[in-house]
Length: 96
Image 1 (cartoon, one colour):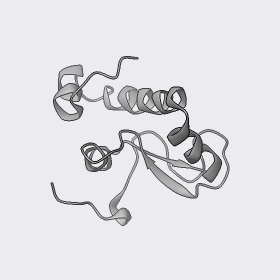
Image 2 (cartoon, rainbow, N blue to C red):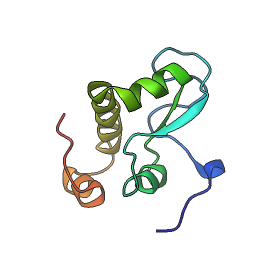
Image 3 (cartoon, helix red, strand yellow):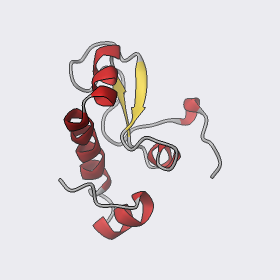
Image 4 (cartoon, rainbow, N blue to C red):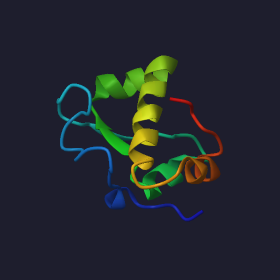
């Protein structure tokens, strides 16, 4: 799968002008579905959110918080796609 440059990232979740959770300055862009298999799929589908450093660390260190972010991504995706498309792309349902 061809890597998408950071400059081409976009979000169907929010404008990424601030941290999604606290409104602070987003230091990093986080892919809702991360890891080797899903990072580029998240970027390609606009499933990225801006996070301040504190919330980005929290997503990677707290499984329940990571699931919150995954649910946000899935809900946004399902506005214009089906559950079947989601599972075909990401390999599982990530139950909400």
